Structures are given as structure tokens and as C-alpha cells.
Length: 296
Image (cartoon, rainbow, N blue to C red; front, side):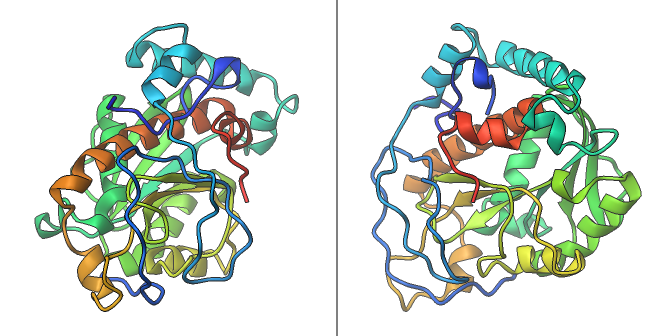
């Protein structure tokens, strides 16, 4: 499979799309070998949710090349930057421009736990995404912490971005996120959070514009620190549930991916990076439309 098999973008619409207590576990059937982009969600209550049927497997490498006229990943990223600059120039004329606060700065937050003992665990998939995003765009993590978080700053897809990895344990992520948003003047609607989701199949990806915490205590912390406001975008990366409902969820999320899970997760990470690029380039509504997802 290609390294970007979950970033679903098409044509001119877009060129680049814990210690933690979760909801009570339930039995789930592992997804098929081909990775899926998660379908748009049906209305649900907080906690365990049933996924809508009809998820369609697609090869994002093919989609990316089709959208870019057959060019490679680096040229796709360059094209995304040009598209983002063009969208930003049309203030008030399109969905992307309407979403942006003055200055247009975005903050992309990956959730996880600090320390090498948590590297490669399911709960740290958010860290992996922002690490990959920083690497793709040549951004370096600062040696000193800002507001108890690792920070990398620069440009992605033509946007001024602040990449963030909170260094408090995942349950306290909101402390760093809210403080950094104030420090760097980032509007709530331009704080994009990436985190693991038990109720999505392993390797599935879902983009949402807002919503509840879904049982994820890192998201709970961010929402609480925002005064219970949840109107910020997020990307969920599926980690699935253990086969046995008796298996402790804390052990599951703090466990490392199995050999069978590593390939789909690598694809999900790479695809999520491309999806974030698409959001930054053309705005969340157009990025979601190009990926075939309803936002809420």
C-alpha cells in the first residue's frame, strides 16, 4: 500500500487533504486488511458508538496523483500551498476564507503521553502525526518548552502554523493547548487537534469540525479549558478496541501496535498529514467535501 492511503482528495477541490479512561469497552470486529476512511458520523451520545456502514476503501496515493495531475508528494504539498495562498487572498469569497480569523494562524495539536516508554503506543498516535508533519515540512521542535509543550513553528500549505505536543500527561492536555492559543493568538476554530479514537477501526480517519470529547480525557481537558466550548476541528485516528470486552482499556491504549496494525497505522499517519495539509490549504469545509465526509 502507498504511504498516503487515507488522504482522500480529488480534482481541483483540494490537492492535499494516560493515562486515560475511555468509554466502557465493547466487542468489535477487526476491520478488513484494506484501510478505510471513516464515514460521516450519525448522531450519537458520548461513549461507545456504532459506526455507520458503507465505508469505502480507496488508495490515497492514486487520489493524490489524480488531484495533482500525476505528480509526487512533494509537488502535491507545493500545489497545496499555492491553493491555500489563493484561497486566503479571496477574503470573504469562499468557505476557507470565511473560516479564518485575522492573521490566519493555525495551531495543530497532537495528543499523547511524554516519555520514551510511550513511543509507539496507541494513545500516542497524535504525536506521531505532528512529528510526521514537522518532518515533511522541515520544521524543528524547539529545545525549550512553551507552556509545558514542545512547539515547532513555520509554514505548512502556505499557512503560518504552530505545531504542539503537550508534555503534561494526556489527561491534562488542555492546560498547554489553551495557554499556547492565547500566547500565539490562535482562534478556537483554527486549533486542529489530532488524537486516537477507540470507536473507529484501526487505521480509519475522520475529520470533524466540532464535537464532544467522546470519552477521550485529553479532549475532555481541552474542552474544559476552553470554558466548555468544543467548536474546534479535530482529526480522529482509529485504534480500534480489544477483541475481548474484558481486556482493560487502559492497557489497550497504553499498549503498542501489533505487527498486523503497524502498516495500516503508518498509512493512517501519512494520510492524516496530507488531510491536515488540505485543511490548511483550502479550509476545513472544502477539505471535508473533497474527502467525502460530512463534518458533523
